Each structure stands twice: as C-alpha cells, then as structure tokens.
Length: 67
Image (cartoon, rainbow, N blue to C red; front, side, top):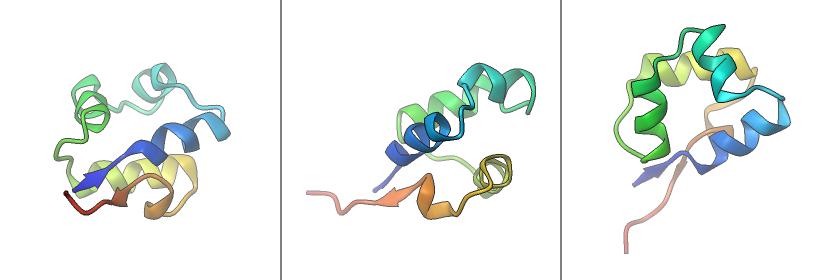
C-alpha cells in the first residue's frame, strides 16, 4: 500500500499550505482529498508535487506492506 504521510511533513518543512497548493499551484481539492485518504493518484500529480516541493518521490510517498 502506498501512503502519503511524508507529504504532509514535507509540505510543513517547505512552508507550503494545502491552500497554497490549491490557489497558487492549481492542485485540485479532489487530488488532495485522495492523498489524505491514501487513495490512488496519478503520476502527473506526484510529478507536479515533486516539482513544487523540489523533492524526490520518496519525500512524499512511501510503500508500506499491508498486514
């Protein structure tokens, strides 16, 4: 299972709010909701977040083995 727990930490470290992602970077509220719920998101969104945050994919996503 891929989880996005690291995304929220990275956002905080970079001082970028969810509001800023929506208003300035045009990330949809639906995509953010899917990220919050660890649901499927497309690679375009992940790529865009890495560009915005100037980070690697492993800074926003992590694979955790399901129990």
